[in-house]
Image (cartoon, rainbow, N blue to C red; front, side, top):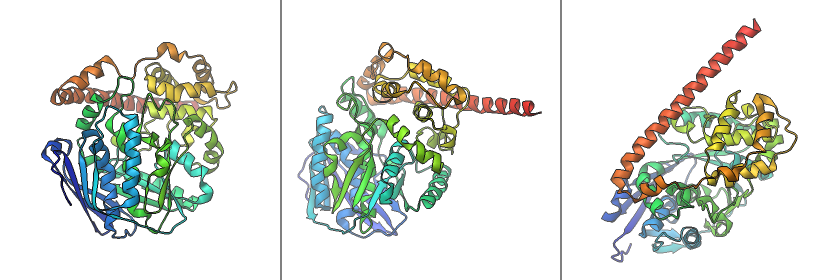
Length: 455
């Protein structure tokens, strides 16, 4: 590969061994601070074709957002031509979404290859969450191959018990539905210093549109790229579940590139389709019959993967939002992988009163507008909660997404900002642990009361 002498550069060289792609990454000195180590891997549970123009795609999908954020060039020996061209369209779309980023990157390949693999089958990036479950049952007639990825933000590669929980739950689900479920394992989240990247990315965002590096530009492309080697000879159409494109200009997210550039992302003859760009509560309403009939479990929680082995903690805002949407759709959350009790809606009220303007605009307010006057499910205080929820004035409680403290945080040198973040994260983990133990204690007390009543 040929270097041009630019200061910032990344080189990728990938090999295949025992269905594991190993990529050695070389970077210029000024980029070393963004890396923890330089050996990336993606491991597959099926045979992978040794095509060097495809093997670099998983690593490139992780590294390109970093290059766009830092203004670095990326070099490879050989690359699929369709993928190289599609990254130009993604580049342009992200530049529109994040105009303060440098976006001076050139993706340089010594050789571009026209790959063609014939397959009419469909695959779906599947996490078990509300979005991907909606995309699955909306396309169930296609019998899509499900692809679950371990090693990104919501499924840490180090938490083996949690991975076993997911394998057991969703392998059984796929077998019942007559579907193929493929697992991919990667060390993507261990390769980069995401704390430092968050700090850099935060400084380059406007006050109203702050997101983390992973959420704002990193995760969607990384997930898609891991599927590229698996696609050869197996599928020609890949579905990626999308959230609702609401307030996309104000709160840009990595998943919203599918609005304009998404149809042009791909490699060889594989095309990517973003599916389900509708409000999340509408997906819950659509899924009522499917969830009631199949008793399939949802996995929406990010905390649970790091702190427990159950699918959901049922305490964080993301869990409580999903529980509220399911209850509004007349679905019992306890049948879908959650642990709901008499305190759940009290917690939800507190969360709503302290949530961000972003979450209000994207999730809570659209749900409020869709609530029916007749709430069928009245378990655990649902009806009085929804009577209150329908009357909440979100405009009066709206607060900026980016606080003055976060503005100060991104102006601090990274070493000082990291120390303050460690203290803040530690306090958050203590609060979460306290909530978990309180929840366990309440369950024990309620169970004891129930046993006494039975007597």
